[in-house]
Image: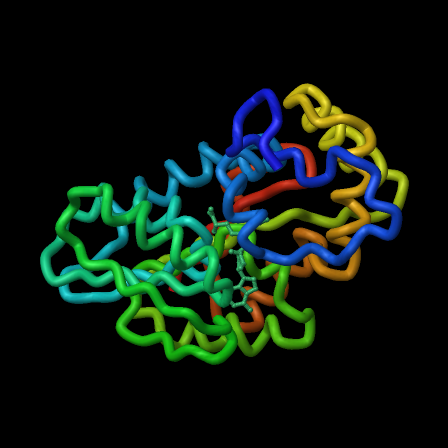
Length: 247
Ligand code: GEK
């Protein structure tokens, strides 16, 4: 519902909800998504910009770029604007029809020539081939943990030699006291972005069992097990990080 800050302002969790429903990427989320993600994920814009810089470095001529869990296409746009090679196609995948519909409108307003194929699918079910860049910005965290290894093996197999994978995620920390600290620092960030304590706590409840964070060590270990010998975080702010892995 619109508030005094406008119809694109995220106030989805501002009123008491009683039993908070599990988070879904529906039309209500689509309508406020840019505001929601900017005010919820510290470093979001820095990470999106870096995807453009990596595109300039890693995208090979006549190859594919994948944006897995593309939402409204922020990563695809950043990549598209920096591609310097001919014959490249971006394949942007999301399983939310509402997201893809809005994404299509957003992409039409951009003048770059590189084609973007929008695919409505579960990223666990798509083929990945001839890839020079694969971006998963805050999407792996929504995939069942027992499917993550197969997902990353598929990406490794579909990447060309020298290709690059970017994974950005919310992280879990050990021991629990450290997790608590990083989580409180994140909540402080959200408060500074204008979210109330009620919004923060209802959103947290809504994401429980939907967004499943893992430790940085688990991510690195899995990437190595999938064949990525070259993998490292390049960015972290509180409990959010972005990793780069090269084939
Ligand atoms: C950005 N990358 O702006 N298959 C396909 N899509 C999925 C799946 C799945 N199994 N599970 C979730 N999604 C974007 C932000 S948002 C992150 C990504 C966030 C989609 C889901 O529909 C949503 O659009 C996206 O992954 C996650 O850089 O909201 O925290």
